[in-house]
Amino acid sequence: MNTDDLTIAAATPRTVKIGGEEFRLHFLTHADIASLQAWINSQFRDPFEIASEQIAEHSGRWTVAQQQYLLAQAMKEAVIGPPKIGTPKASELLVSQEGQIEIFYLSVVKGDPSFTRERARDVVIDFNAAEQSAVFAASGADMVADDPK
Image 1 (cartoon, helix red, strand yellow):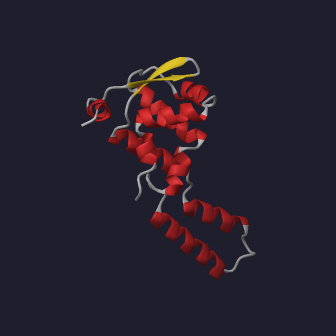
Image 2 (cartoon, helix red, strand yellow):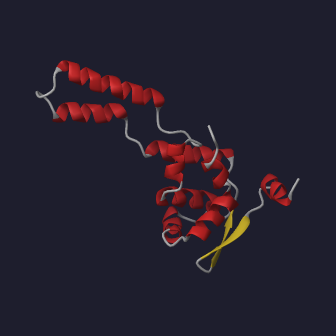
Image 3 (tube, rainbow, N blue to C red):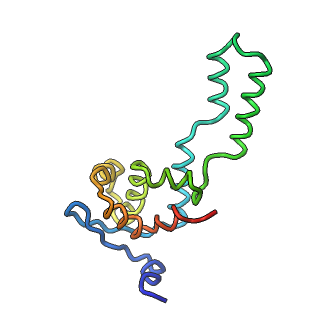
């Protein structure tokens, strides 16, 4: 067992320096990953809501068959649901600036309950590539985003 395995098992936070400031990042737990999935889910609108808006917007111009087709497509989308963590689409969201904010927030707030998403946003906006990599490694987000499903 290497020492990284021990720090993860013992939930030992790792210190990462970002923009001259040190932050203690905690490894993401299953509950955190569930929170990330909930965040991903919130990034997508209900397909039936979208279909209903489209039908209302084009009222009188679309046939019943066209409306039924749109609703059938919405049903297919609803069954599939939002992208799941570990898929390319979800990984794309996690590496976006908003995704990085969520990961950084979840990793820091465990050790500092006063830490806010607004503060996370202020820090993440100035991330460089090395800092992003350090946060992803220290939080375990690199394993979450790359999980091949």
